Image (cartoon, one colour):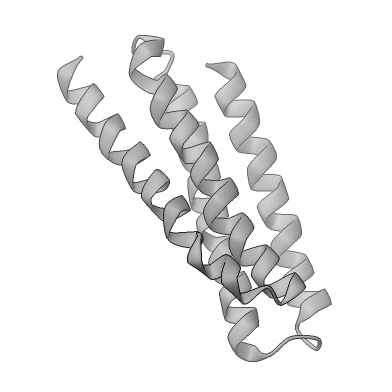
Length: 121
């Protein structure tokens, strides 16, 4: 359980770094639309990093089988959703936007599965 809290805290710190980079390093280098895309990636990155911390805390109160897969799905979702948005803006590879919804589905699946497993436990 502690490992999910550590991962969540580390990802939250990374989200702050990406946010600062976007606000200070990218603001004058990309279009306002691309900056908004980057900020969306940062926002969802932070939300779900905090979610991982929450899941880690829940793991002290529920069987680890309840929280393991939802935590993995949130982690993969952050990587694919936010990562694809970061790459899209930083490299100009617009096709990366096509894989962003896969990350979104992983995030949704993680939360739905967590709710379902908590109800069942």
